[in-house]
Picture: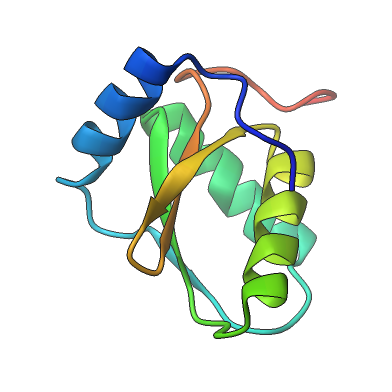
Length: 98
């Protein structure tokens, strides 16, 4: 999983803001579908922070899910709050080709 390109101050603020959010999605072990990414893109149209609950218990599996979310969701990984990965994409930014 790639490191966040966010500055420390912004990362701290985003994690604090995300603490007030409910998770938007739950991910178990399995393949993330194009339909999932369409729903994720729609969620990013409404807000710039999304929490995704990762139910995989093994750290490598969680890291793999996060890397996949960042790559295919066109977003930035902010950090973890418990079992929830916090993802950031400026509100309204479309995926390429949309």
